[in-house]
Image (cartoon, rainbow, N blue to C red; front, top):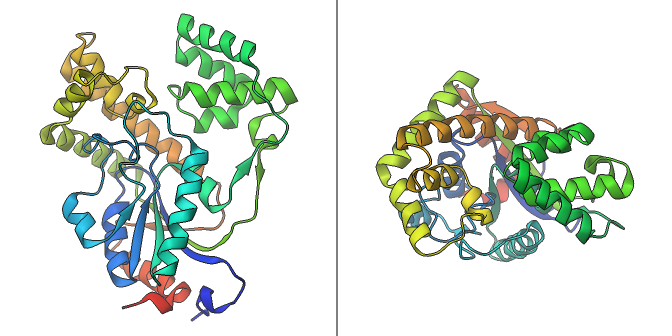
Length: 319
Protein backbone atom coordinates (compact mmCIF):
# COMPACT_ATOMS: atom_id res chain seq x y z
CA UNK A 1 0.00 0.00 0.00
CA UNK A 2 1.40 3.46 -0.93
CA UNK A 3 2.12 6.00 1.72
CA UNK A 4 -0.68 8.42 2.49
CA UNK A 5 -0.14 11.56 0.49
CA UNK A 6 -0.34 13.76 3.58
CA UNK A 7 2.59 11.78 4.99
CA UNK A 8 4.84 12.81 2.14
CA UNK A 9 5.40 16.27 3.58
CA UNK A 10 5.37 18.27 0.34
CA UNK A 11 2.97 20.90 1.68
CA UNK A 12 0.14 20.16 -0.74
CA UNK A 13 -3.41 19.44 0.34
CA UNK A 14 -5.20 16.14 -0.25
CA UNK A 15 -8.03 16.02 -2.78
CA UNK A 16 -10.18 13.21 -4.13
CA UNK A 17 -11.66 14.05 -7.53
CA UNK A 18 -14.59 12.06 -8.93
CA UNK A 19 -15.59 12.81 -12.52
CA UNK A 20 -17.62 11.32 -15.34
CA UNK A 21 -20.59 12.02 -17.59
CA UNK A 22 -23.99 13.03 -16.35
CA UNK A 23 -26.19 10.21 -14.98
CA UNK A 24 -23.28 7.79 -14.56
CA UNK A 25 -23.60 7.53 -10.76
CA UNK A 26 -21.12 10.06 -9.33
CA UNK A 27 -23.45 11.17 -6.53
CA UNK A 28 -24.11 7.69 -5.15
CA UNK A 29 -20.41 6.80 -5.18
CA UNK A 30 -19.35 10.09 -3.60
CA UNK A 31 -21.82 9.68 -0.73
CA UNK A 32 -20.58 6.18 -0.01
CA UNK A 33 -16.91 7.15 -0.11
CA UNK A 34 -17.50 10.31 1.94
CA UNK A 35 -18.98 8.28 4.77
CA UNK A 36 -16.13 5.77 4.64
CA UNK A 37 -13.29 8.33 4.41
CA UNK A 38 -14.57 11.30 6.47
CA UNK A 39 -15.22 13.21 3.30
CA UNK A 40 -16.91 16.50 2.51
CA UNK A 41 -18.18 17.02 -1.03
CA UNK A 42 -17.58 20.04 -3.25
CA UNK A 43 -19.91 20.20 -6.23
CA UNK A 44 -17.96 20.41 -9.50
CA UNK A 45 -21.03 21.43 -11.50
CA UNK A 46 -21.21 24.91 -13.02
CA UNK A 47 -25.02 25.07 -12.72
CA UNK A 48 -25.44 23.86 -9.14
CA UNK A 49 -24.09 27.21 -7.94
CA UNK A 50 -27.50 28.73 -8.80
CA UNK A 51 -30.31 28.78 -6.25
CA UNK A 52 -33.85 27.55 -7.02
CA UNK A 53 -32.53 25.18 -9.70
CA UNK A 54 -32.63 21.91 -7.81
CA UNK A 55 -34.34 19.33 -10.01
CA UNK A 56 -32.79 20.15 -13.37
CA UNK A 57 -29.23 20.35 -12.02
CA UNK A 58 -29.61 17.11 -10.02
CA UNK A 59 -28.43 18.64 -6.76
CA UNK A 60 -27.92 16.41 -3.77
CA UNK A 61 -31.15 16.19 -1.81
CA UNK A 62 -31.51 17.70 1.65
CA UNK A 63 -31.38 14.19 3.11
CA UNK A 64 -28.12 13.51 1.27
CA UNK A 65 -26.69 16.80 2.49
CA UNK A 66 -27.55 15.83 6.04
CA UNK A 67 -25.61 12.58 5.56
CA UNK A 68 -22.53 14.33 4.15
CA UNK A 69 -21.59 18.05 4.11
CA UNK A 70 -21.87 19.58 0.63
CA UNK A 71 -20.30 22.81 -0.62
CA UNK A 72 -20.47 25.15 -3.66
CA UNK A 73 -24.23 24.66 -4.01
CA UNK A 74 -26.79 27.52 -4.01
CA UNK A 75 -24.22 30.31 -4.05
CA UNK A 76 -25.95 32.92 -6.25
CA UNK A 77 -29.32 33.83 -7.75
CA UNK A 78 -30.08 32.55 -11.28
CA UNK A 79 -29.82 36.01 -12.84
CA UNK A 80 -26.22 36.35 -11.65
CA UNK A 81 -23.32 35.57 -13.99
CA UNK A 82 -20.92 33.33 -12.09
CA UNK A 83 -17.36 32.98 -13.40
CA UNK A 84 -14.90 30.11 -13.37
CA UNK A 85 -12.42 32.40 -11.59
CA UNK A 86 -14.87 32.91 -8.73
CA UNK A 87 -15.51 29.18 -8.58
CA UNK A 88 -11.78 28.46 -8.41
CA UNK A 89 -11.31 30.94 -5.56
CA UNK A 90 -14.21 29.62 -3.48
CA UNK A 91 -13.35 25.98 -4.12
CA UNK A 92 -9.75 26.39 -3.02
CA UNK A 93 -10.81 28.23 0.12
CA UNK A 94 -13.27 25.47 0.90
CA UNK A 95 -10.71 22.71 0.34
CA UNK A 96 -8.38 24.38 2.82
CA UNK A 97 -11.18 24.68 5.39
CA UNK A 98 -12.11 21.00 4.98
CA UNK A 99 -8.49 19.95 5.42
CA UNK A 100 -8.29 22.03 8.60
CA UNK A 101 -11.05 19.82 10.03
CA UNK A 102 -9.01 16.72 9.19
CA UNK A 103 -11.62 15.70 6.63
CA UNK A 104 -11.04 14.63 3.03
CA UNK A 105 -12.10 17.19 0.39
CA UNK A 106 -13.93 15.50 -2.50
CA UNK A 107 -14.46 17.45 -5.72
CA UNK A 108 -17.30 15.71 -7.57
CA UNK A 109 -18.90 16.67 -10.86
CA UNK A 110 -18.88 16.82 -14.61
CA UNK A 111 -17.93 20.40 -15.54
CA UNK A 112 -14.41 19.81 -16.81
CA UNK A 113 -13.38 23.45 -17.07
CA UNK A 114 -14.42 24.22 -13.50
CA UNK A 115 -12.79 21.12 -12.08
CA UNK A 116 -9.49 21.69 -13.88
CA UNK A 117 -9.50 25.34 -12.85
CA UNK A 118 -9.47 24.13 -9.25
CA UNK A 119 -7.00 21.26 -9.62
CA UNK A 120 -4.52 23.07 -11.85
CA UNK A 121 -5.67 26.54 -12.81
CA UNK A 122 -5.50 28.34 -16.10
CA UNK A 123 -4.23 31.75 -17.12
CA UNK A 124 -4.34 33.67 -20.38
CA UNK A 125 -1.52 36.19 -20.21
CA UNK A 126 -1.55 39.22 -22.47
CA UNK A 127 -4.91 38.62 -24.16
CA UNK A 128 -7.03 41.67 -23.46
CA UNK A 129 -10.71 42.03 -24.23
CA UNK A 130 -11.60 43.56 -27.60
CA UNK A 131 -15.01 45.29 -27.14
CA UNK A 132 -15.58 45.98 -30.84
CA UNK A 133 -14.79 42.42 -31.88
CA UNK A 134 -16.93 41.06 -29.07
CA UNK A 135 -19.84 43.24 -30.15
CA UNK A 136 -19.51 42.04 -33.74
CA UNK A 137 -19.65 38.41 -32.56
CA UNK A 138 -22.68 39.12 -30.40
CA UNK A 139 -24.43 40.62 -33.43
CA UNK A 140 -23.35 37.67 -35.57
CA UNK A 141 -24.84 35.22 -33.02
CA UNK A 142 -28.02 37.28 -32.67
CA UNK A 143 -28.51 37.30 -36.44
CA UNK A 144 -27.49 33.75 -37.30
CA UNK A 145 -27.76 31.85 -34.04
CA UNK A 146 -25.36 30.30 -31.57
CA UNK A 147 -24.87 27.26 -33.79
CA UNK A 148 -23.37 29.49 -36.49
CA UNK A 149 -21.00 31.01 -33.92
CA UNK A 150 -20.04 27.50 -32.80
CA UNK A 151 -19.34 26.51 -36.42
CA UNK A 152 -17.14 29.58 -36.80
CA UNK A 153 -15.18 28.58 -33.70
CA UNK A 154 -14.80 25.00 -34.94
CA UNK A 155 -13.18 26.31 -38.13
CA UNK A 156 -10.27 27.90 -36.22
CA UNK A 157 -10.20 25.96 -32.92
CA UNK A 158 -11.85 22.52 -33.21
CA UNK A 159 -10.67 21.44 -29.75
CA UNK A 160 -12.36 24.39 -28.04
CA UNK A 161 -15.48 23.84 -30.14
CA UNK A 162 -15.62 20.20 -29.06
CA UNK A 163 -15.67 21.05 -25.35
CA UNK A 164 -17.84 24.18 -25.49
CA UNK A 165 -21.59 23.88 -25.92
CA UNK A 166 -23.12 25.97 -28.73
CA UNK A 167 -25.17 27.84 -26.12
CA UNK A 168 -22.07 28.86 -24.17
CA UNK A 169 -21.82 32.07 -26.14
CA UNK A 170 -19.61 33.90 -23.65
CA UNK A 171 -16.80 31.32 -23.73
CA UNK A 172 -17.06 30.84 -27.51
CA UNK A 173 -16.58 34.57 -27.99
CA UNK A 174 -13.60 34.53 -25.64
CA UNK A 175 -12.01 31.66 -27.58
CA UNK A 176 -12.50 33.50 -30.89
CA UNK A 177 -11.13 36.67 -29.34
CA UNK A 178 -7.99 34.83 -28.21
CA UNK A 179 -7.51 33.29 -31.64
CA UNK A 180 -7.86 36.68 -33.31
CA UNK A 181 -5.33 38.27 -30.95
CA UNK A 182 -2.74 35.48 -31.03
CA UNK A 183 -3.37 33.56 -34.23
CA UNK A 184 -3.37 30.38 -32.13
CA UNK A 185 -6.15 28.23 -30.67
CA UNK A 186 -7.14 28.53 -27.03
CA UNK A 187 -5.55 25.19 -26.10
CA UNK A 188 -2.12 26.45 -27.20
CA UNK A 189 -2.38 29.80 -25.46
CA UNK A 190 -3.86 28.50 -22.23
CA UNK A 191 -1.25 27.98 -19.55
CA UNK A 192 -1.87 25.24 -17.03
CA UNK A 193 -0.09 25.62 -13.72
CA UNK A 194 1.13 22.92 -11.39
CA UNK A 195 -1.52 21.42 -9.16
CA UNK A 196 -1.52 22.64 -5.55
CA UNK A 197 -3.04 19.29 -4.53
CA UNK A 198 -2.05 15.68 -4.06
CA UNK A 199 -5.03 14.52 -6.03
CA UNK A 200 -6.42 11.07 -6.63
CA UNK A 201 -8.71 11.02 -9.67
CA UNK A 202 -11.56 8.54 -10.12
CA UNK A 203 -13.44 8.47 -13.43
CA UNK A 204 -16.75 6.65 -13.85
CA UNK A 205 -17.98 5.28 -17.13
CA UNK A 206 -20.29 2.62 -18.55
CA UNK A 207 -21.26 1.29 -21.99
CA UNK A 208 -22.65 4.13 -24.08
CA UNK A 209 -26.08 2.66 -24.77
CA UNK A 210 -26.59 1.97 -21.07
CA UNK A 211 -25.52 5.52 -20.23
CA UNK A 212 -27.93 6.94 -22.79
CA UNK A 213 -30.75 4.86 -21.32
CA UNK A 214 -29.93 6.24 -17.87
CA UNK A 215 -29.96 9.78 -19.29
CA UNK A 216 -33.43 9.23 -20.76
CA UNK A 217 -34.72 7.76 -17.51
CA UNK A 218 -33.26 10.64 -15.51
CA UNK A 219 -35.00 13.22 -17.70
CA UNK A 220 -38.33 11.39 -17.30
CA UNK A 221 -37.84 11.30 -13.53
CA UNK A 222 -37.02 15.02 -13.44
CA UNK A 223 -40.26 15.75 -15.27
CA UNK A 224 -42.16 13.63 -12.75
CA UNK A 225 -40.47 15.49 -9.90
CA UNK A 226 -41.62 18.87 -11.24
CA UNK A 227 -38.92 20.26 -13.54
CA UNK A 228 -41.51 22.07 -15.69
CA UNK A 229 -42.90 23.79 -12.60
CA UNK A 230 -39.38 24.71 -11.49
CA UNK A 231 -38.71 26.43 -14.80
CA UNK A 232 -42.11 28.15 -14.71
CA UNK A 233 -41.37 29.63 -11.28
CA UNK A 234 -38.01 30.99 -12.45
CA UNK A 235 -39.69 32.52 -15.50
CA UNK A 236 -42.39 34.11 -13.35
CA UNK A 237 -39.75 35.53 -10.99
CA UNK A 238 -38.25 37.46 -13.89
CA UNK A 239 -35.05 35.52 -14.47
CA UNK A 240 -33.91 36.61 -17.96
CA UNK A 241 -34.32 34.01 -20.64
CA UNK A 242 -30.78 34.66 -21.89
CA UNK A 243 -29.20 34.30 -18.42
CA UNK A 244 -26.33 31.80 -18.30
CA UNK A 245 -28.30 29.72 -15.79
CA UNK A 246 -31.21 29.37 -18.21
CA UNK A 247 -28.93 27.71 -20.78
CA UNK A 248 -28.63 24.69 -18.47
CA UNK A 249 -29.86 21.33 -19.66
CA UNK A 250 -33.65 21.25 -19.50
CA UNK A 251 -34.28 24.87 -18.64
CA UNK A 252 -33.85 26.27 -22.15
CA UNK A 253 -36.11 23.65 -23.74
CA UNK A 254 -38.88 23.89 -21.15
CA UNK A 255 -38.82 27.69 -21.36
CA UNK A 256 -39.51 27.24 -25.08
CA UNK A 257 -42.44 24.96 -24.21
CA UNK A 258 -43.82 27.51 -21.76
CA UNK A 259 -43.61 30.16 -24.47
CA UNK A 260 -45.54 27.90 -26.86
CA UNK A 261 -42.61 27.64 -29.27
CA UNK A 262 -42.55 23.83 -29.06
CA UNK A 263 -44.91 21.30 -27.53
CA UNK A 264 -43.96 19.69 -24.25
CA UNK A 265 -43.27 16.23 -25.66
CA UNK A 266 -40.87 17.67 -28.22
CA UNK A 267 -39.17 19.75 -25.53
CA UNK A 268 -38.59 16.65 -23.39
CA UNK A 269 -37.13 14.79 -26.34
CA UNK A 270 -34.85 17.76 -27.03
CA UNK A 271 -33.63 17.63 -23.42
CA UNK A 272 -32.79 13.95 -23.75
CA UNK A 273 -30.95 14.46 -27.01
CA UNK A 274 -29.02 17.45 -25.73
CA UNK A 275 -28.11 15.64 -22.51
CA UNK A 276 -26.83 12.61 -24.43
CA UNK A 277 -24.63 14.88 -26.55
CA UNK A 278 -23.43 16.62 -23.41
CA UNK A 279 -22.44 13.29 -21.84
CA UNK A 280 -20.42 12.48 -24.94
CA UNK A 281 -18.59 15.82 -24.71
CA UNK A 282 -17.89 15.26 -21.02
CA UNK A 283 -16.25 11.94 -21.76
CA UNK A 284 -14.15 13.51 -24.51
CA UNK A 285 -12.96 16.21 -22.11
CA UNK A 286 -12.00 13.89 -19.29
CA UNK A 287 -10.42 11.25 -21.53
CA UNK A 288 -7.61 13.72 -22.19
CA UNK A 289 -6.51 13.64 -18.56
CA UNK A 290 -3.93 10.94 -17.99
CA UNK A 291 -4.19 11.09 -14.18
CA UNK A 292 -7.72 9.68 -14.11
CA UNK A 293 -8.22 6.06 -13.04
CA UNK A 294 -11.24 4.87 -15.04
CA UNK A 295 -13.80 2.37 -13.74
CA UNK A 296 -16.79 0.80 -15.49
CA UNK A 297 -19.33 1.20 -12.71
CA UNK A 298 -21.60 -1.52 -14.13
CA UNK A 299 -19.10 -4.13 -12.96
CA UNK A 300 -19.65 -4.94 -9.29
CA UNK A 301 -16.00 -5.59 -8.47
CA UNK A 302 -15.10 -2.06 -9.54
CA UNK A 303 -16.51 -0.54 -6.34
CA UNK A 304 -14.03 -2.48 -4.24
CA UNK A 305 -11.24 -1.47 -6.61
CA UNK A 306 -12.22 2.19 -6.17
CA UNK A 307 -12.25 1.79 -2.38
CA UNK A 308 -8.79 0.22 -2.51
CA UNK A 309 -7.46 3.04 -4.66
CA UNK A 310 -8.80 5.72 -2.31
CA UNK A 311 -7.64 3.85 0.78
CA UNK A 312 -4.17 3.47 -0.72
CA UNK A 313 -3.90 7.20 -1.28
CA UNK A 314 -5.75 8.45 1.81
CA UNK A 315 -5.61 5.79 4.58
CA UNK A 316 -5.52 8.46 7.29
CA UNK A 317 -9.16 9.39 6.60
CA UNK A 318 -10.68 5.92 6.88
CA UNK A 319 -13.18 5.56 9.69
